[in-house]
Amino acid sequence: MKIKAKLTGDETEIKLLLESPMAGKEEAATKKIEESYITHITAKVGAAVVWEASTGPFLSKDPYFMFKFKGAKAGDKIVVETVDNKGKTEKAEEAIK
Amino acid sequence: MQRRKFLSLGAAAAAVVSVLPSSLTATDFRTTAPKAWEAPTSKEAIEALFGSSAATEGKIEIKAPKLAENGGAVPIGIKSSIPLTTIAIFQDANPRSAVAVFEMGDNGVMDMMTKIKMRKTAEVTIVGKGKDGKLYSAAQKVEVSIGGCGG
Image (tube, rainbow over all chains, first blue to last red; front, side, top):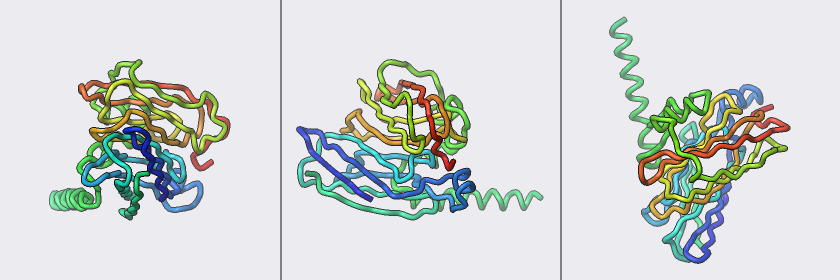
């Protein structure tokens, strides 16, 4: 997982790149691989959830997201957690610059 | 038969309960609106997720290419002139319509972007729920030259 967190004025811009084949039923059958896709993503600053996504296999492989929010300051940490269709979780954090 | 039915119901209920701790927050739309993720068309998926497909156009802006060379990663940008709590992406290019449902925090800025798979030319629809509780939508047709859903 790669996170870029940049503060411009009062807006924080997050660029998030995850790693997953995002393979659903049909794609898994065609490619003869296991179904594997991220189902939920949460982004937090401190205790506040700033952005959340419930996701399915029709997002691109290694999904990319850009989103923005206000209220954070430089040095705050953004923490991103993901869970996939098998319940496997990942967590990463990045300081806002 | 009766007992078997009861047992299978119990197993289903247990499965639902065991999913909850692994979901990160209270609102995982895959758990709260499972039907929305199985619907083949955008209209059905929107109704399953939001309870209605009656939405106002013009407040949300979708930014997508008219022609996508690679259907494996079609960039979809979303902006809104009004504050939204929930934003969802639907398309009619894949076996099921729902792609992702986003929830904006209280300080969210209505400007985001992601990339989706489209295996053929189709319409992409964005539906957002405003802080006023009303639904807003925007749609755009994207032509796809090479499909991106496993060939």
